[in-house]
Length: 193
DNA sequence: TTCCCGATTGTA
DNA sequence: ACAATCGGGAAC
Figure 1 (tube, protein in one colour):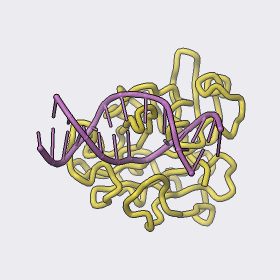
Figure 2: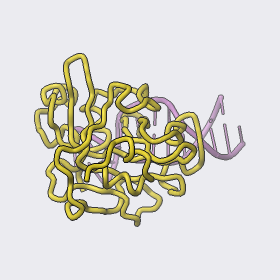
Figure 3: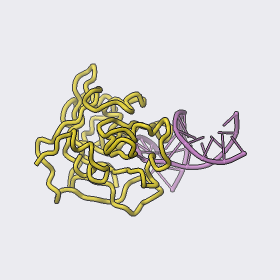
Figure 4: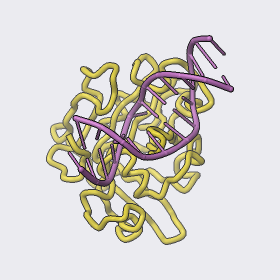
């Protein structure tokens, strides 16, 4: 049973994050199509002290509080961009961080964006994934999926529940114990750790 | 206006 | 293990 994208993005982050594994993220660029399969995600919600939405709406985090189906792109560590799929209901601040993906189409474009030919290093981290997609600013933040240059497609083959691993999230200082990072077991394209 | 810090990455 | 690098957000 495949979940329509429109239904999936209405779910709370903790439900949507594992379900997004296997879905495809795509972008149309002047050089052609880029497409990857999502293999690693993390869930962030309003009651979560590690979430940007924890302290309420700010100009930066406003997209997290919109209806699911938008993008939330943020700039971090003075040099990296990370992309989220906003999920859930309007007024509730939650999103799913895209941490890693498996390259499918537009490999040469991503190799150019990333300055490496190593397939496993094209999208094996949230900042790296954004680089592969050619994201160099936060202009896409708040944009609506499938109505902007970023598309989300249903999986061709559904990921079985037993193939999904849950583990603690990476790089956070709060709520380090909860297993809200999800990835496809044995997939070679997940981020380090 | 000042100050601290971060949902990271690449290099040593 | 650690530097690079700068915008967001709280405090002053």
